[in-house]
Image (spheres, one colour):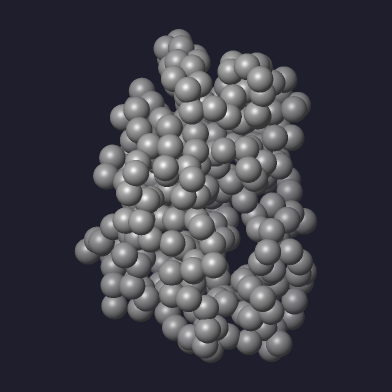
Length: 299
């Protein structure tokens, strides 16, 4: 068995995850090989999840499905049973577990889970959100290259303190990036392993990683534009953007809609949410850094 830490959770796993930090702490999550079969369960709902995968929701678990194969069962926020006979490449299977599977599990545990990346600035988390292809991970890498520690990539989980202030949990020290994005900053792309042999997306492992839970200080919605800059978002539209970027909203929407609205509303009340206009050009990246640094200078 292996023991790891990710998203502030101690994980006891039969599967080796070289992407994760090892720990000796008491496990909160268990990942095991096993047989899974949703046909024996009462299915509450099912549908598309995260573009190409599917899900089935039961009273106490969620089944994650890829190419009509049941990959794993996520149970009560504390156990993941992984199908041993998927014929999926090991690296991609790990990506499915570390991505959508853990995202669903954290939602089961009561966390607010955003489809967002984040870096640490001024002892707080700065989150970047946006539609697929808008450049969340590229923006995160840009700030990382300027010395700002990575907090999370693609999945950002949040809890609230007694006063309703949102706190972000560190994910794990990896950013998923296309090879062409890595080439903007480094020549040797091949040292970063492919996530899937038929995809050009790679695991970019980082050394400067923030391991602490920290207050959420800003949320930036990335939009491509002809000029770099910030625009305020009114509370109503900010709430819509947060809901749109909820990681597991379509799975748990009916059961958790009221609680989710309250939590997202709490973020809007406590944290500035702004549109970050970005020019997709390498020579404009310093402007991007400067705009966010200036905005953060008010803290």
